[in-house]
Image (tube, rainbow, N blue to C red; front, side, top):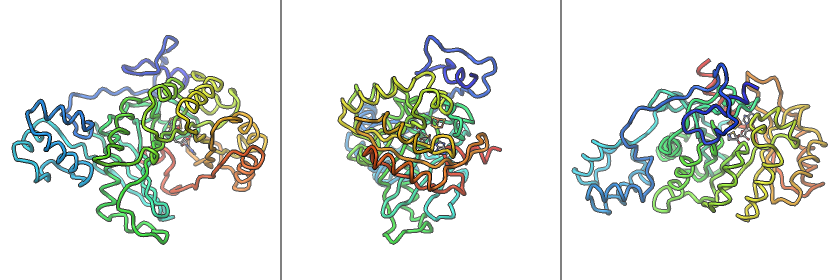
Length: 396
Ligand code: SAH
Ligand code: SF4
């Protein structure tokens, strides 16, 4: 129950706080943090916002185009390096803005050679995880949306650490720029290539790192607008996946607002309300029937299928009958189910499913229900690449 109370703790700006919110007697999971006024972070601004700023400063729009190229094409890491900008523009930028490049506190490579995990330091000394995953011919960045998470999923290292604060748009953008800079510098040459040419450009982004992206809706959506800006980073929206624990108002807002066509993934993990609430306390706020209704609305209004994530836990939710319950729950919905064998965490006693059980689960979905299903590779397990695990390991 304490976790339940934590989720709805009415910290300032909490978009899910509601009339039924109850402040926990001892809010040890919630460590709200208040940021002091900081200079404008250039990574916080969309191109139209930058245009408005330059118009206010009476600088030519030509300089916006140059600056944007420096930021998102050249991956500049300082304003001083932007030599094609006139000195007066650089001076003003240096005086009134900052370029929110995030320093690396720690970088670790997995023994499989395909995954590198970064612990990045934020201006207030908090640390977040960003993971670079190299698949054949493509690189994916797994980025965080919050410091910690308020949702308290029992098996998740980030959930176990509790919520500290939302990331700003600039801090979300900076993670992708970090990976892009690493790729351009060739610093990942050591990572296995799987027979393909080394990738020099980040092509895929998954919002599956620390935090719940729909709890930090506005900052995340603005970051997606920046990622997909055709004149800058120019990542196709269809190469971005946002994973949510099932924040119903956020899913309905996505359905209403008809945003860029990024992929939506919903973390399900159980096909009954009781089973789900035991793993995902947020299900008590947004029950399974409301979540499925929101998913249906989303698919109907956007015409897009949803990826449903299912963390497979040995003996708990990995039987063929569990798979049949998923099949029945998703009947008639455009869906794909991604199965993720549990990454063990210190705070949860469950163990990963066995590979035969994962295959059986997948077979039931595909052959009995015609639902496409994949089993996620467990990448970087030796570097604690599960959500939030590195941050926990290095603060222990
Ligand atoms: N908050 C969002 C996105 C971040 S978590 C969400 O929950 O969807 C990304 C995915 O990793 C989710 O599907 C989550 O359930 C899963 N996950 C978290 N901890 C895990 C663990 N220890 N083992 C396997 N999957 C885990
Ligand atoms: Fe938060 Fe997602 Fe972890 Fe749940 S799984 S605690 S929603 S980051």
